[in-house]
Image 1 (cartoon, rainbow over the protein chains, first blue to last red):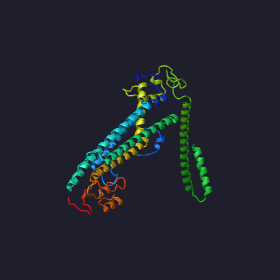
Image 2 (cartoon, rainbow over the protein chains, first blue to last red):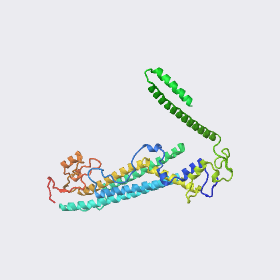
Image 3 (cartoon, rainbow over the protein chains, first blue to last red):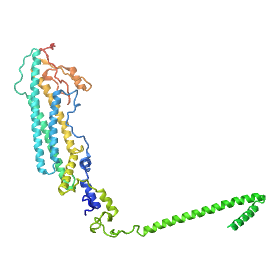
Image 4 (cartoon, rainbow over the protein chains, first blue to last red):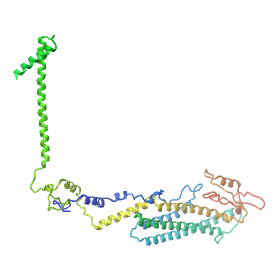
Length: 193
Length: 244
């Protein structure tokens, strides 16, 4: 390459250098965003991206306000987990083992916060309904004290709800680990991720 | 020339007389005079066309000859096509604009960088590569076809149902377990819309129920008894409606 003319910005280049310059410097971020990933084995199943919003058509009738808010809170925890895992996966410099460890920590955090949310909501709802039922009985001439200790059904419902949250987290943990191991294999075998 | 014209005219008269003896002398003279004028015009036209063709042919031949001879006149300092050119074959030394081949000039015009442009350093190229990798992964994660999205969407549906079931059951059982061991009956109230299933409709008809016999939801997503119905006080041995 040699500088010519009086203008130092002018250079004589051959076609290979021209192509290199175009491919490495002339592309804008918009052009790069427009690049589609190569079709791989991952691109076979099609589904929409999760929106983490409650389904308004779930079940009969319409969800009550408390039910809707409860579902929104659970899904917001799931959305936080999804976003955090995405952020980890986009960091190329993170070691795979460290990435798995961070994912596990996030999933543990999701389970912990989800179980706490479930326990608080079920307990609070039971207490409110106990109060309401006692007032209804009082209206028809029956005096009954509010149960002071947690009832069996409440404990079993909390147990089942907390287990459901744990099941969601553990399922995701296994599925993400499955994806990572599958990706590692494909990268080693075929150079694709 | 006049002799030729006269002989042609005489010949024409003889030929026309032989071909048609009935023609008069005036008619023969007129036709031959007419033909003679046109014949002369035809000859002149042929001569002009021939001359033009010859000139064009000479011109084309001249161009071909010039092209085959090399076209341009050699200028002082200009390398011949056989000489090396900088950037393509090798560096022949400092070059000026005038002695560059046309294709190099075209490329260098195309690559006229803006004033603030800096040739990318290795660091900048690495940054570009990192950006590309980030965008590639970003696009892959944003791609709705990835496995991560499918799995999260499955778990989203499950979490939504878990929340719905938990809240509904807490609302029902929170009241129902207070009514247990009390002399009350509780009706079964559906949502009374088009989505009510026949089983739920039948349960509503067959109610009310004692708290200990209150039916369980016949299917997932059953939103009957939400909010929970008012209890009805009963006395042993008979049902009694109590106006509240």
